[in-house]
Length: 319
Image (cartoon, rainbow, N blue to C red; front, side, top):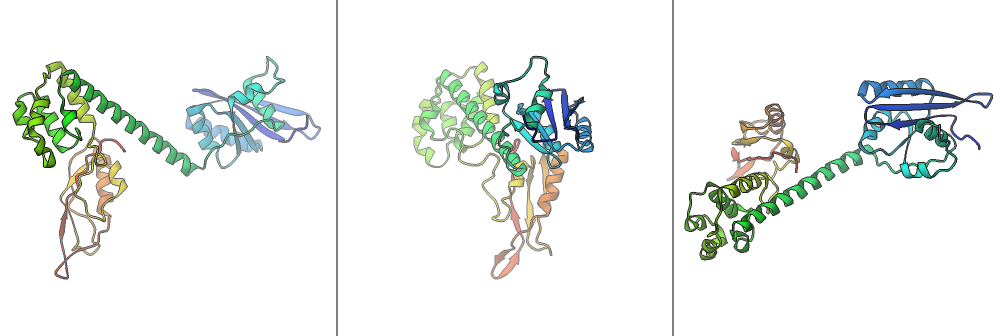
């Protein structure tokens, strides 16, 4: 069979090692084979790339092995033509001998043009896809946690979800905190209702007349602490300046407030206070970024004024 790729390498990817088989067609038509094993650390993979380039390799093929192949693809990308082949497709190609190693078989198929590459999107799309998948997992875990909380309340015969349209809104959370504390009466908890929900105080009193035992309060408290309001993006304060809605704030992981802007020459945010943060270094970096934001000055009676802006960011995870 005609050889289409004169210098191709097949990679057999494992968790801790990568077996590389480089097949090179010499001038007399014979095939020279080189087998080498590399580790999966960054330094080892950089060495793999350097070796392939020094040998004049132009194409590399490997099976789509999930997460193990991603760092290898990222390091080899740009300098080599990479073929990520479906493992089932490789197995179905006839003619393989029992004593042929996986890397050598992949390199042989690559050289004869018998591998069909799977679609690998560009790097920006891959990064966006990873973030979107992570976001979907967070949303699913949050929904599961809310359902778990509702189930515990039903077990304790707390019918709050039947009366409150949003159990995880402001009124619902106040009542949940009171339930967890276990000191307020149903009448006192019903009085915590806000807005239109105050019209349903008699129904709330009946719904809160359950029996929440001590062993119920632990899962309810844990679930309430890990969920956010359903009507807003998690961690949003609801009071923002039109110019300071930045998605970077979502990743800040800080709690900052009392931000002022408007009169200084650059019209940038200043006087930011960090009250708490799970990662102080990350919070400091986020504050430095926020200080670089630019705002349109507030106008009163035709003159710019200094406007306090309340920034309350309670993000614990990127959403």
